[in-house]
Image 1 (cartoon, rainbow, N blue to C red):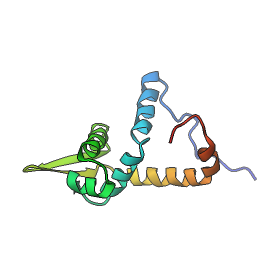
Image 2 (cartoon, rainbow, N blue to C red; image 1 turned 120 degrees about the vertical axis):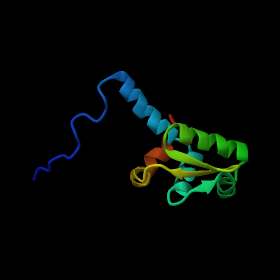
Image 3 (cartoon, rainbow, N blue to C red; image 1 turned 90 degrees about the vertical axis):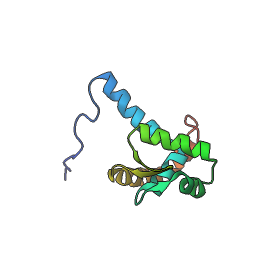
Length: 119
């Protein structure tokens, strides 16, 4: 029984700059702190102070990661007085992270033994 593929024949843009943008998209997600921040910000907005308390790193490090996520369009910032509130901009981020988590679980041994990518 042949199964019809639902995967398009071309996944990436044909031009080199388009592929670079997709690679940059994944590099922004390639940091454990940024992934934890995205998960924390998925359902409601939080201040930097709340993010610091949740992540357990210095305010400077958390702010740098939040700035990266904001610059790349993963989170939006809303300013109210002297406070900045962050929230995930697109709920599809949750779907992407869940899919990645599932794929990683299916490949845990290979990923754990991979010497080419640092943890």
